Image (tube, rainbow, N blue to C red; front, top):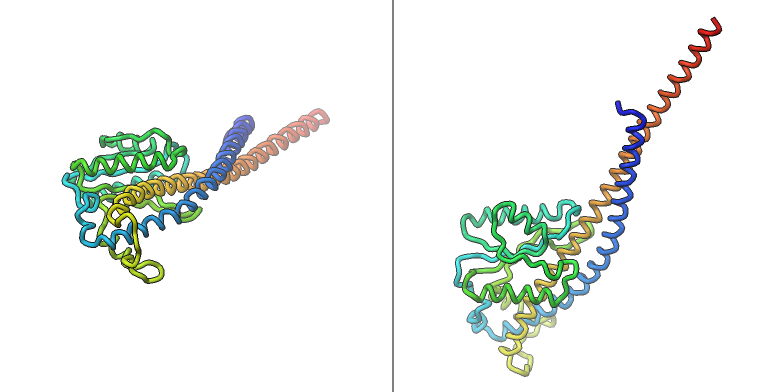
Length: 296
């Protein structure tokens, strides 16, 4: 059994760890609120621009499928954008994302894949498994990513798709659904699904056809300007959702670690008090025994 000195040292160490995890929990909670507000604020814009693209697509009709971004790429590879975290201590956030990626790769079989990566954990995971990362996007860091940075990533993906090297582009990220629920997702970014867009754009909220609108300039010009904004918004939302999910997972993990440290510290204190009481009792018995011996 550990000595009183060892128990006292362990109690102090666990207490220090508890203070650190508590501080990290508070920091994660603060940042979570900030990024959650940004993610929630961006959703109405994302919904509106997707609706506008759908309505414009309905006006174009069959001509929509003739645009390069709506056709399958000429290459035989798939380009995958993996959005992970830069730091650890966020529970199963990264491992759930990587598990989703592995399941997707298993379903694909031997078809080749290239990777663009946001976040150091994703880069480390792929390189440790011998998978070459085509681009590691480190600037700006995910935590400082703004719409301009997301637009740059969207342009990189679009240019790579139009180069003829890839057949499609898929984004792996974590969608934020609630404080305790964040789900890995893998939507196809390119080519854009024309049939789904036409179905979504047949009518607006009032049930009126998009053909009743008078547009200037013509719908094709507006549509071609809207599509890049639509792709940029999808990337920006994926980055925001991932970052919000990361801090939500880190907050829960640090809270669990703080509670575990509190429980462990209480258990160690009970053992310490029991051990100390045993030593005091033993010393009292020795004193009484010695006094009895002298008296006899």
